[in-house]
Amino acid sequence: MSKQRIVVKVGTCTLTRENGALDFRTIDKLAQVLSALHNEGNQVILVSSGAIAVGVNKMRLPMKPKDVCMKQAAAAVGQCELMHIYDKCFGEYGNIVGQILLTAEDIAIKSKRRNLMNTFAALLENGMIPVVNENDSVSHAEIESEKKVFGDNDMLSAIVANLCEADTLIILSDIEGLYDSNPHENPEARLIHKVEDINDDIKSLGSGSGSNRGTGGMVTKLEAAEYAVTHGMDMYIAHGQDPENIYRILEGDAVGTHFVKKYEL
Image 1: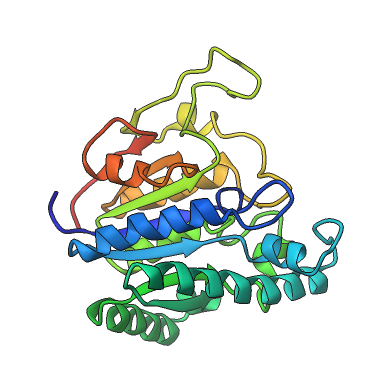
Image 2: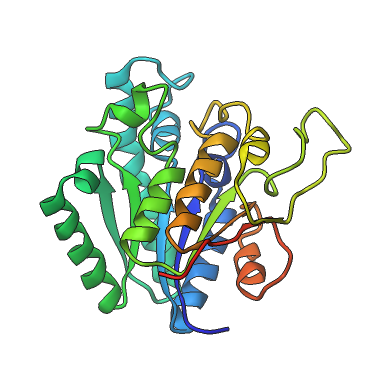
């Protein structure tokens, strides 16, 4: 396997249990896999959701709040907890993480985008693993809007991957990949292993929003896939419960759904 720059996005439902508590076993395994790839000479960037859900659990709130200010407070508490765990888990495998929290302005404004690219470059060149999230404690867009700017970090991960000129984007979710019909409703639904054209038929397969703990769904993943492949990156969706799926994808195994890049950068 040739050395790559890899962006891995992990969703709230992969990081947490139904009660909102962190799934330490999955997080530790994720850290182990990404550290192994990093120690082999690959450059790895982790885009992580989960701040609000973790904050809700840590604050002992009965449910995810509807009030924006309370969601932002939960994000502030949860992000601290998440980074504490990531720092500890990656540290066990000899790696250092660096936190990057983004808003839409950081991407849209040229001077901020340039500073952001320089920060990513400095972290990667010095052997660090950037951990990226939207800055939910100050950004209303992700929390409040029906048409979210980054879509539970799915689109954010594609934008970050393009910004960092990544070779591959892997989105770990609570589903195996894209199916030809809703697998929760149709037991005969078949997994689509490769998508070479994200046409209207493919887009129609994305339906429904995310879980109570997250905000995204297959629609946002298809939007991220369309962005990624048209910017010269292969993108994959795979189940996050087994982080070793990342190895299998990079080794060429038929895991999850592969969205084939359109052209070389």
